[in-house]
Amino acid sequence: MSKNSSKNTEVNRKKDFPIFTVTVIVVAVLVVALVAYNILKNNGTFIKNKTILKYEDTQITGMDFYFPYANLLNSYASVLPYMGISSYEDMLKPTTFDENMTWQEYFASLAYTDLVTMVELCAEAQKDGVELEEEDLEEIQSTIDDMKKAAEDSDISFKTYLANSYRQGFTEENLEKMLRIYTLGNKQQETKRESFTYTDEQIEEYYQEHRTDFDRYTYRLLEFKVSDDSDAADTKKAAEDFLAKVTDEETFIQAAKEIQDTEEDETLISDDAYTNIDATIREWVGDEERKEGDTTLLTDDDDNCYVVYFISALAPDYDAVSIRLIKYDAGYEDDATDEEKEEAVEKARADLKDMIDEWADDGADEDEFATMALMNSSDSSMSNGGLSENFSNTYYDAYSEEISDWVFNTERKEGDYTVIDTDDGAVALYFVSNNGPYLTVSVDNTMKDEDLTDYVESLTDTYADVIETYEDEAIKVITG
Image (cartoon, rainbow, N blue to C red; front, side, top):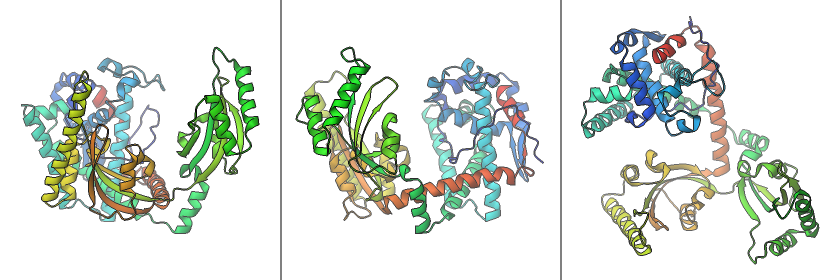
């Protein structure tokens, strides 16, 4: 029977419940303050013995709860200042959306929701025969070993490391217990997600009903801004006069060049995702009835005018690919001379090529490439071994056309690799796989995500009467 009675506002479940990155959480000043505050309390005796969730043989204590709570705070560390939270005192202030709930209570409730979901998924794993295998257990031990190494590198004991990361009294036993729960929960989630399959007809039907989520839009746009020299009436008159000259795409281009006093065509916007289109013109551009040659003049709330010439809305016609990437940039001081910068760039390029040559001589193993990415890449994908899955060609265009051309070469095959120079250094690429037509892959993934969300949300009702939840008590563990 559920014993949960919380005064907190409902926290929507999320469709992704990843294992939190387990690192030295003391990098977050807020978490340090939180830990220091709780150390003043009875050294964890009450917390250690307090049950905050129970299901069959699984019993989660208040001490265990510091795993999801502290790691959740750590995952928010980079955005907390933008939420007005930079100290422990800020955590005790009311949230911006509920004056009866503090930020501390909010994050505790959010962490508790994730914890309950993980236990529900573990219960589902037991029913479906999904278990932790040797590879999973090795990964858990590897995580613990990495944390021990981090403690050693910081010249502190592992006991102190865990106290700094979670709270005093949090042990290796607590850590392994929670890692097992979160690893199994995530494994069940991924297993369930991959079990969802769809026919070509279902994928096509979904695409037709959600075209703005997948199509790429090409159009021409010229903006007329209100300024000190042009009030709202003058601005609109200029836009109307321009539009009157437009009879086709070429006249749009030529009239725009005259206004902008340039020989360059600066009006074309191609392969734009719907969400990237300026809000003022988005609905018009995305209208399913829109056809090539349509034009319009739209005005925003500040009386700025936008003249748009529509060209096309097309589904992506390229393949989805997965690669690993090492972005290796030159390092130099801010006040470096141009010559010093150039030398640093050349050195970075040479160093990366030497690194890849040595890796290739050792067998060109993908896992080793992933390790090199983790250790050396400056790209955001580095934490995942440089892996980028199912991205569009516009993503790679952000690096360079040469990189895009290599990645999307139709003759590219698994295991291919190269090093390409960039303005700041070089990029090493490893081709993992061609995953099929990008549209099909994207729609399939979106449908799986939605079905997985429905599945996870359904578990609340499934286990409402069999998982004993004590959210209020869990929050008190954090708030005291």
